[in-house]
Image (cartoon, rainbow, N blue to C red):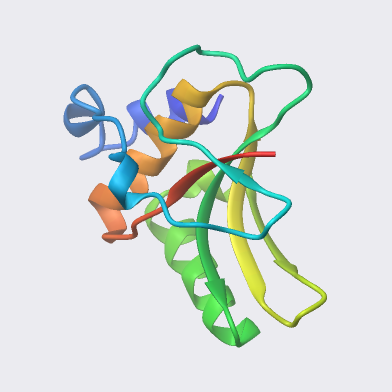
Length: 126
């Protein structure tokens, strides 16, 4: 499991113990068909068949998205397994990790990205 791999990664273990919820103010709007949720755990499992993702970034150029993916793979190899880089119809290239089984697992990944790479990810439920 990605969370377990992050917990056993040197330098990440101590900081994961104090993972904090993403503030509602830090969550920005995404595509109209996507609902953005605050990371504060209300319920561990998303409702229905919803999937939980960690949105890492949206880029105009695929090379920039690829660079971010490479930084993540180098610094947090456990996240690389869940990482995807996809192009939308409007040409925007999305970098995200997931889907995760519940919000708490996504929060651990988001906190590690914030701490280790100074990336401000969003928790997204689709």
